[in-house]
Image 1 (cartoon, rainbow, N blue to C red):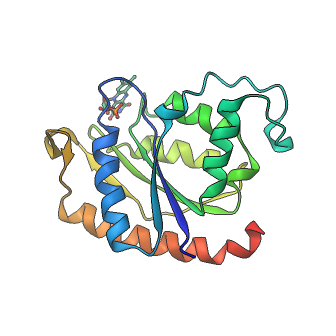
Image 2 (cartoon, rainbow, N blue to C red; image 1 turned 180 degrees about the vertical axis):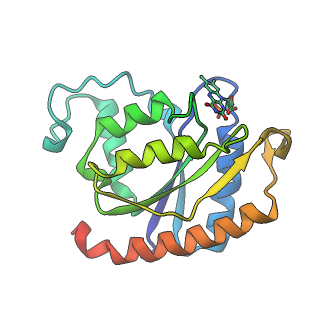
Length: 187
Ligand SMILES: Cc1cc2nc3c(=O)[nH]c(=O)nc-3n(C[C@H](O)[C@H](O)[C@H](O)COP(=O)(O)O)c2cc1C
């Protein structure tokens, strides 16, 4: 069975550009990689600010929103976060989503399609990687960035440049390699 890649849209604000970027990457990864690719929109989960009574490692979730989110995270073998940077950092929605579950993230590789202004969201991607260690995720250095992303989006459609295509090819290859290698650890 094909390994599953969840492409997670990390911005949830009205008017966001995240879905345009994510839809391109989802389609590209579906066509060019061996992954079974799924688009996951954090906005659909409507997670309130973290409100579980027990430590997530116990996996004894009280709320239906957590159970739904845990199921989605658990189902994947790898993740790509499609993320802007807010004040050089990940979105509050993404940090909140990381906090909700723990073991479900473990022993899986992850990378980024980051976008935004001059830095292409790379500062947020770097800051997000510090979340990977306690959650036992494997950061993949190959990633895609889209600095000054706005002219690349017309009528809700993102058009990649050559560097972004090359970066996608390199990242998908490595991500799949790691997802396969870590499979025995996921039990
Ligand atoms: C609260 C907030 C903080 C932002 N901080 C940054 C930043 O630190 N660096 C940057 O390049 N862009 C920053 N931006 C601009 C975003 O790159 C731009 O709004 C982008 O569209 C955000 O992604 P989204 O539309 O998917 O939410 C910020 C935007 C918001 C709303």
